[in-house]
Image 1: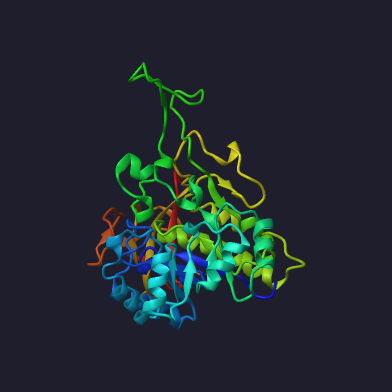
Image 2: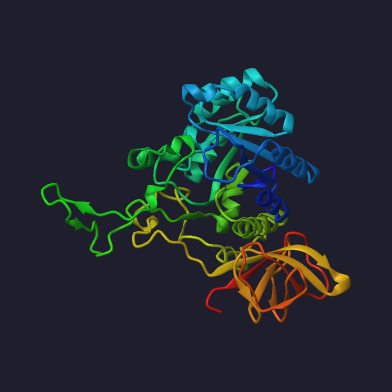
Length: 410
């Protein structure tokens, strides 16, 4: 354990990228408008890509661009130009899974760092060495590996090869995401970035000779969510992750909200820093888990890290998230001379609501909405309109990218 692991966060758009970096990510992974396995994320056009990479580099942080589709023949049309644009924008690495794309990247921009996607299903040290010889700098390991298997890969691969693994977020029921259920049921190909997540749907059994008679797979008249995995969470196991030899700890969620990213990244940032500052005396801080759970989530599992998942790793009765809080506003500007702040609404809130304000690197603050003003300085009692700009009284100032949340049913 010689190098502190990188904390790597998802970013579905430019705002989420800035939030992730501000709340403690060392690097972010993003998708451009093509060749990414999250076609339904906002993703980055070239101008946004350049702005985002410039923002990250100014903060001393990195940006990795995903090109992890399994390419069809037509996908290669114009790909060289796309790779050149990524390199010119300043991307620190490209994430690929297809050997054909790997070869094209090497031919087009030989100095562009290559990371191998988890979609490539790397599960052993011999495969890792093979990919490294092919020009891969970092392996994003298959999610089906245990900590012991990761340690063995680390012990048997060159130090020049970096290892990365997912530590938090949604789990795919198929092997490292290589799934054809979505394609079969909806015509949308998960391996082309268009997964409809049928693993989250409710299923029944129907007997061939009794069409229309749906029988629950378990004794439950609502059916069962047969493939619905719990969410991965390794927050309580930072020491084990650090000792495994991983270079990067990866958070899943390019489709998640900026609030989710801020909450999860800040929780992992605090525990990773606390551990690294005193490995021998480290004790997990339960407050970090309490904060983490204020973002929407399914029940948690440690996935394959300690044992193979069993029936307790599947959530059979529902595919819904646990949502104890709503993200209601984001700070736009401090107006200290007027004793005000300007925020942008993200969910309905009203006068009298008690909110919590989260700031990068700080404990949350309680805040009661005593007064509200619209942009014309008219006194109002609620903020019902999407992205409505609201003035709120506030003494002092808040850090950039401060976020406001409200406990549900409060």
